[in-house]
Length: 125
Image 1 (spheres, rainbow, N blue to C red):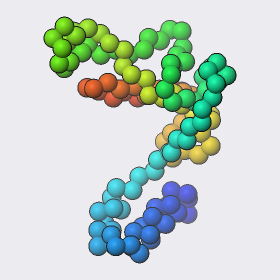
Image 2 (tube, helix red, strand yellow):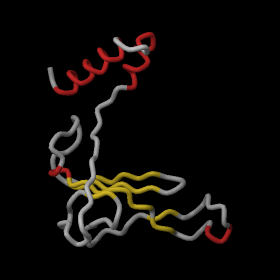
Image 3 (cartoon, rainbow, N blue to C red):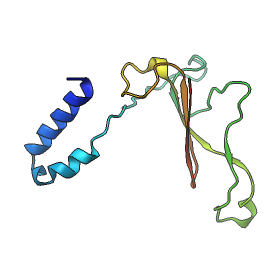
């Protein structure tokens, strides 16, 4: 039995033994593998370029431009067509993740960004 099967079995068992047992099948459909990120504060400038991080500024390859959105749904009519950078959420160096669900590459970088209208995930290998 792999780690995912063991974790799903444990979650199912706990739900079956709880007041929510009548809705066990509904909960089982919602169980998905995930990675939980824990952060720690690091002094500015002390983090190696390309390391995993939450917030701040992304470490992008020189040839990349950070994605923008055109502001089409902005409530301010003057900003409706002004290209605006997406908000940076996180950067993950996949070699720094000790365990990953099936389908997540072992190397490369992943960047996440968002704005009011869209969410974007970019992964390179």
